[in-house]
Length: 228
Image 1 (cartoon, rainbow, N blue to C red):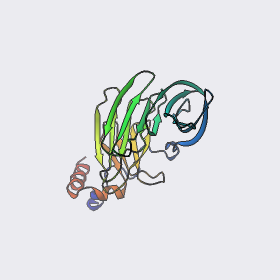
Image 2 (cartoon, rainbow, N blue to C red):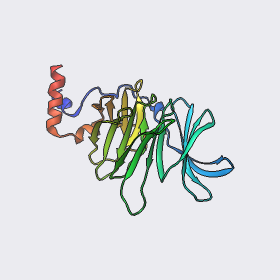
Image 3 (cartoon, rainbow, N blue to C red):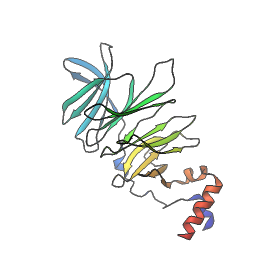
Image 4 (cartoon, rainbow, N blue to C red):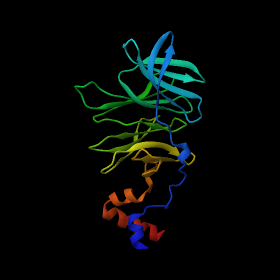
């Protein structure tokens, strides 16, 4: 029993995880906006009310980002080198933008109908963000060699937690279990790697994740579990 506890933190199954609720990858498509044709990537909000579309016109001029509610464009704005994005049920957007070939890094920008709520620059490449359906929390993953997953409070723009992902490339899956948990995957499938609660604490990890934790942490977790 003690040996099993060294490799297991929390329940055997990920609490609240729903494979059918894993956000879909952005869709590449062509859209007509005000007579102009755009090559876009699009994602929908969990309830399907909102659509986020971003891309360049076929003429090759600057990229634009569109927030679309029930099929109607609510607003649009210029954006430089957008790569990924997510949109909440209330229309709050989290979008990742890259840099030119002479720089390294990415920018995470969060906004609603007005000015940006916050913008944060990372000196590394960012993956696809996840935003909680109520628009309160945003998660973002950085790529190797320093893979991390960070959870940010939208309204305060404060960083709640950052967790290193040793030897893996994280892919944010999204919020599950009545949106209480952020689950992170590392492959192309829907199997979660570990889960984080709204306070930024890791509440679940698969066996592969547990094996990457330092032995001291695993021993401490085991004794905490045995005492509870």
